[in-house]
Length: 347
Image (cartoon, rainbow, N blue to C red):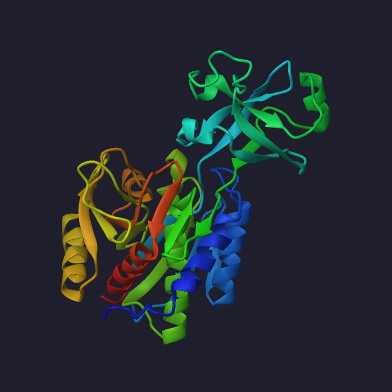
């Protein structure tokens, strides 16, 4: 039976905003994991944070003979200090694959290893139209952009006195907003929008007294953006449903108002039987969905398969526009994702 999510829009949006409010580029995810853990425990679920940092939420099912896995990731794109210039600017290296031109002018926070936090702005190294001839044409990339720190610094030594050093994380603002028309726009909807859907599914099942058909583990991973988030899933999973962003763009059919079912990404096809079952369930129950092939994409499910997990894996997610830039999705896409998750969980 398709879940009635009429009254759950605010829940999904609040969970999304709670997660998006925590800086969490890959390798620096503790705040986001703790927030998700707080929400899950508050709903009455048993949880475990693994040695690597993944959060596992245990969901008892009707049948204990098999175990289902659902995953999303709470790590995001980000930057790290790679050098300090003689003028006191921070040169950076990318964590994951942020679109660097979209970062020109973005506010950010610099986290030092001793717990200090400084603010700054990511800018071109030719930032002034009244001064530099190439202010509008200089490439926006790692070699030509830097962080201007909001402290009085004029040298590398000034920066070092602040405690800022190579290896410090630079986290830029998500700029999260929910519009009256139902859009959720923010950086890092990949994949905190889907992580919010997993948490909302937990609340829905708790509110309605629903148990999944089998025991389930909901896992929020912390290294997806750098390629190894799903390497440590439980080995006894029978099926794994990755809930990540759905792609929108040329030659793809998904919209922000739909749930995307991925038949194949750059790593290869997903399980034929499980993917076909998801398509059939969505069609039969009237869930608004699209089926697509993603040209530049890989998921935690792929990592699980490549690390030897004997599991059937599939991938779904809300349609997200402008991935790795200023992303946007719609409540209807989030709702459709939750509906398909519910159909899958109850079987």
